[in-house]
Length: 346
Ligand code: SF4
Image (cartoon, rainbow, N blue to C red):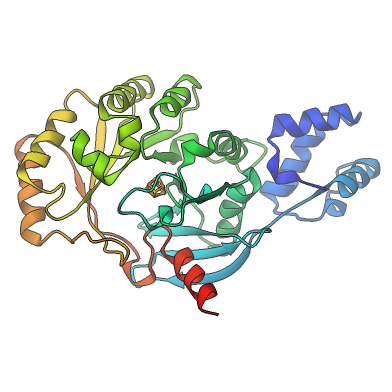
């Protein structure tokens, strides 16, 4: 049996055609599954009896099981979901004004081991399937009714560009007019900087937004924080970011976690302002959110002020963000790790 949510509209149409069912059945199935949230083929009343029987004998419709739900005082909600193979993933919904931003996971664990991120602490286990990505959207959208998801960021556990095909397929389902019909420009893929994959995304004409975890404009410091930088140093990455912004005429977003004495000094601000020259960008400065696994320190008010003052003087437009959901371990991967620790204790 195959999970029907692993297939894009085209793939499903091809399968049905091979079985001598009309390809437009795929559109009807998409509409039942993604627009009406129906999880039973026998309820798909506009399909022929034979088609319904074929689907029942060959496919199933998956969903996610919620293990834990935590709500922060700032409204951020974090969910721990169980997968069929007993692995777990986290998904976060962040409300702000009229926006409800969904932060989606794409892998179980992560192989990139950034030195401030708990998601990479236990290494990489596996890629999420298309269905496991899309089900995060469907599940949370149904939980937050009457509100609805307004934006999606691929910024949860895992590196989205390391699970490229499944991420692209899940976005194609999200944006299909017969599926969820979610706007591409409301979707952001966030990467630690896998330059060849950024290039591939750029060449696909896919039109989603791009965000880059930057954290330093100096190769030596960035490699210390993000080992991926040794493989794909800044020059090539920033070149692709420039091309991306130019092609789509929207800014590339950079995330910069400000860590005391590491990347928060005067020279760091100056390097950053130089690097951003000639780029269409947005940059979020985020004071470090402490996690017990790391030795880094939170920058003081004075550190933050001095750093941002230099940026202002150099004409850098930035947003100073506060970490969300600190009281519910909302930093990416923390809930999953707490659960793994509990399991070990048992
Ligand atoms: S920041 Fe992203 S790429 Fe780096 S370890 Fe965490 S999940 Fe992986």
